[in-house]
Length: 321
Image 1 (cartoon, helix red, strand yellow):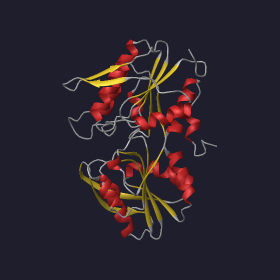
Image 2 (cartoon, helix red, strand yellow):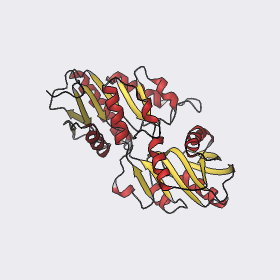
Image 3 (cartoon, rainbow, N blue to C red):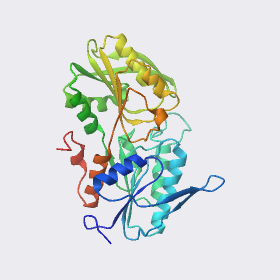
């Protein structure tokens, strides 16, 4: 049996992000191992793993994006199958962590679903989780197993620097994203602005005020995810009304629910720049969309984990040099 860096390693892909898994496999230089995901007539998920995983370090690629519950259940069943088959390690590569927005009790009698998902993954038998740009960093504290929270910032920065944009201002779409905007602004050596907004109900945002100078600026609005697109489009309109020359949107996770592709493409945005933590079907793609691959970054992270090396060195903007 061939070893990879002195270890028995297998890489699996479930249904949610096959393209990403293929990119990771190509970068690492190992094939994707076979697993058969089928459904019973009533919708129950069944998984069959033809080859042995006994004693292997196993990596499973699966974002819990839409349909969230289907993909989450698929992942839990896969973890259970691997543990029962005596895999040495079950490392979950979950670039987009579903339910991450439910990380606290905002009102009385609300669940903390992000913690529930962490409990489910651990109970099923996961030994490590690799995620990317968690909606709330404190989600790492919900786990008693190692969790590596990768950052897409190096990939986004490289793309933006290659565009040679001038007179940049980095914009946070809300107060909660200021730290993220500051990180990007520091690298680009640009000022920041903040959109002060009120959200009357889920997925509906009302722009209230712009804190900072954006007139005659090339604005880059950065967020961790774009779901329905309402917040980003409202921010873009407010920035253009305030005199911004151009507005670019950047995010890690392009959920693009409902009619988000249409409203984003019809908006004032110059480009919508995102990564492939979420695999987008053709009907969710649109002319202004730019999707960057995280396969190399995640692949390098997997190699470091196999070799028992730290991964923090991968989060700098020159990680490919």
